[in-house]
Length: 294
View 1 (cartoon, helix red, strand yellow):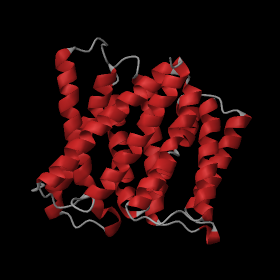
View 2: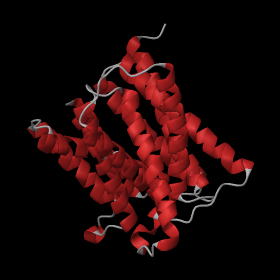
View 3: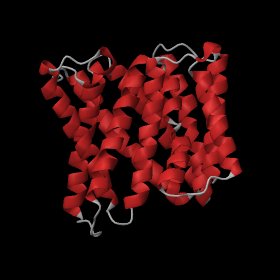
View 4: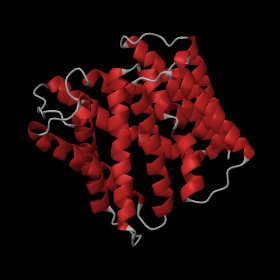
């Protein structure tokens, strides 16, 4: 019989694999539709699932601080669109690694917004993690591509969403919090589609205003539905993992999605990372693990 910790590790490994698979599906779908359309359909499915869950069992928490609930949704949407966009333009392993910088930003935001103490060990972990970022976005001349910058920014907004959740988790039902994310993640892309014909957006943000095109093949629809299903499965496995084991252990195992993503990316045609990128990935993982131990 598996121990409680063993089950948690297995749940997280399965969740990490499916999370990386979700990234691979995004990369495949990017050949058929824009990143914003992928976000729109993924969140639309999420809205349907959450509304069904709420209809089945009504929320019990009273709520409050509505502006923070909206903030969580906006931060979550920005994190998702930046993450999905970077998946379409840089190797999958690099995109997921830059998104996994969110624990580093959470520590910084928790210090400023939640008044949490930053220990020497945490500061050391942050330095290690940000050195890893520099190595991934290239050390020679310390240049940084725009796509890599957006990947880092996506990690920051993910951290902002997580920090907001910490402030409202005791006053809002978790399903309401998720609904704010998928709901705003459906409404804002729809606005982008409506404005697209009338907005001459600069190239740097043109991915936020694509012309909407309804998928017209069963192949694309099947990929969209499959993505929605495995995204939900990934969240369920993550929840089960954190319920079955210690947060510090699961936090370490969660980084398994990076090598999984590198493998999926290679199968989809991405070049394998160079030595500097491997070193950067390693440092970000170490920094994230050290922060998670706190």
